[in-house]
Amino acid sequence: MKWLDLLHARYHNDGLFFSRGWGDLELLQKSLVVKRPPGPIRSRPQKQGESHRVIRFDSPFADHLPESSKIVEALIVLPADWNDETPVCVQLAATGDEGFEARRTLVAEPLRQLGIGSVILENPFYGSRRPSDQQGTYLHTVSDLWAMGLAVVSEARALVRWLRNQGFQHLGVAGVSMGGAMVSQVAALTREPLAVCACIAPHCATPVFTEAVLSRYVDWRALGGEESGKERLARQLDGSDIRLFPLPRRPDCAIWLPAKHDAYVHPESSLLAAESWPGSCVRWLNNSHVGSTMFHRNEYIRAIQEVLGRLSQTQPAHEAWLP
Image (cartoon, rainbow, N blue to C red; front, side):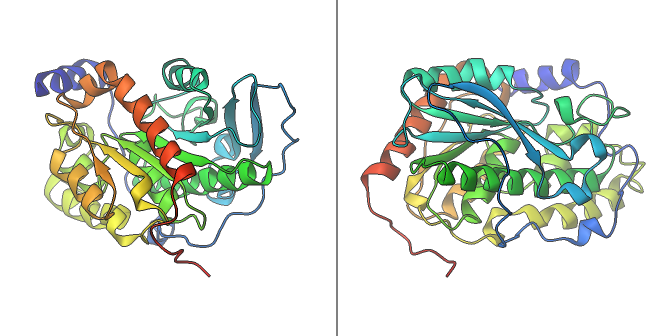
């Protein structure tokens, strides 16, 4: 079934990643394993009955983002009868997923019908936060990708903290592909337990950009040549390996949904991520990467519902790694 991924890549990709090279070398030295919690979000309180709205706040990583990306935008979608017992899931974006509409209509609205709220985060460098000189979602430099990862994880952690301050106690994070990789990092770096659903997510960005389909859409010449560029890029992206991160508070409240015929994220990579969290659950999707997003949305929604249910009903399986 990989033909669907290959066909999608051929006709969907019309640019190259990292066409301006490595970018900010000092930023590339920063570790993604940032244990320090982000500061509080200053946004007006959610009002009872206000089920859809966008909140805006300064990114905790604003100093390292372009001007257009410094302000975070997130869409809140809640059931009409929400209260502080309502479970809420922070949704992160897949590569190329701009705006709120797809995640709102395909995931947040069905979850709302199940009594589950969503907070949909717009990535820096995407949609309303995209630099004006950036072609589509093709990041100009490797340091832009690094900045995106650091910013998204810190912004999601800030949203989780804000939701707790609003009174919500049953919280989770969910994402597809790149979003799935980032939600695992959010859970690993958050003091409190979170439910996690990671769909077609890699354990690390290295094989995605150096071995799988997206490697064909990297400007290797701008990175110093394919051979040396791949070697250096691999060393850099190895820092995103989830196995370098702490074990989350509730690995038993995590479900991984890898695809058996994935040409974007090797199935072995998804399995490495799941194996690094003892007690987590793996459910294979019999499809490709693209096919999984098209035909397995219900499995994704049910998995989100399940992990949030586990979190609210069972006791912690692993002690917090932070004091």
